[in-house]
Length: 232
Image (cartoon, rainbow, N blue to C red):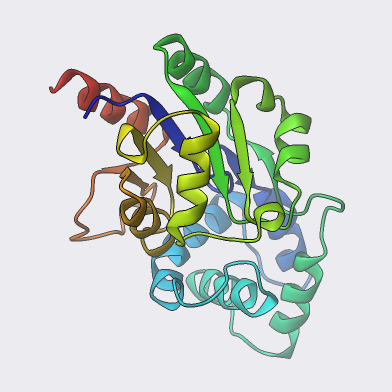
């Protein structure tokens, strides 16, 4: 089936975490970490978090705390009362949009190129209703034909209904879309359940043995999409 649309997760796909803020808060408790070290630990934490998802919401405080716990573990920081306070502080950091509010540098060029090839583009994100505002603030909204925010739709990935809603919004069949995201049980499983293809972002190279294409970054994902359209 010819690809006509590309769906993209928001967080950790076209919108990044503010690793500077996270590192600064961890350093405030006496742990000498750099933003680069936090980024690497967080990228590895995604694969550890993934088995706990699918049957639980990604948007709860408990999920965020487990995510941060795995990140801190990767930095050699014990999970104790001080770490709990770090989690609470980071959960409330950077109002009104939170930690996932940093533009992925490659995103504008990749989205522009995909649009130039005629793809319809939609963001499909588990969020609290703020994704459209964040995308507008970082300058990405102009590239998108639709924004599916679970906080506004009342259904979140991996439920196939959110992908079906995205397909309807951009006037394609689910089979004519490929979704790019960073969590297997949420992005890949959800997209496939709706009939879409899927690409898993794996910047740390930790997803071993997954049954889907993986890409280290957004430009590499775009190259995979190009190969899908040409049959290369």
